[in-house]
Image (tube, rainbow, N blue to C red; front, side, top):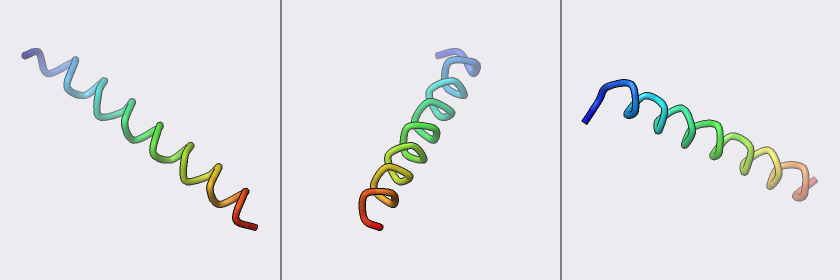
Amino acid sequence: MDQHFIWMGILLIISWVVSVSLIIYVLAK
């Protein structure tokens, strides 16, 4: 497993989680 792909996956998951939380935060207002 290449280190680059691991970091890409981590960044993808983090950005996905952040966007989902932002959507939930906006809808919950």
